[in-house]
Image (cartoon, rainbow, N blue to C red; front, side, top):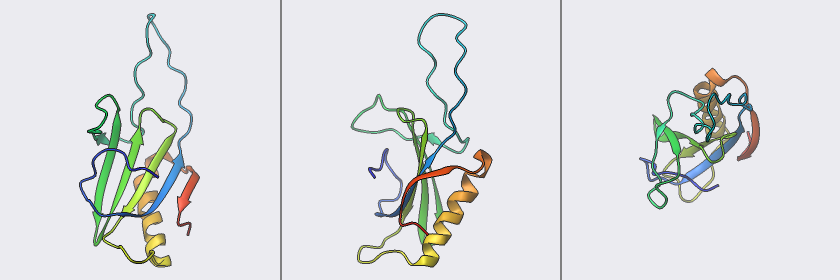
Length: 126
């Protein structure tokens, strides 16, 4: 899974989840023209520029959780997907079952305002 934007932590992604967002209602246009760009699904997401393509609209949120970081990423070009990453300075092993469960719990807590979301893909699954 490619990581979009510029993360504050430069640790490797050791686990990730792709969540399927509900389809928003269609935009009602009062005047002819292009529809407005989609807005991020969570208020905590802030603009996170992509240095190689300044036209891309990527939003992210990072939170330290002790020795690791949970990062949410939403790309306006793919508005029905929200990605969550677990970043930790681990280079030689996989996460333990307890660490994976802790990561999933942190993601569930952060996306609680959206309600339950379907999992599109994950590595590793709990």
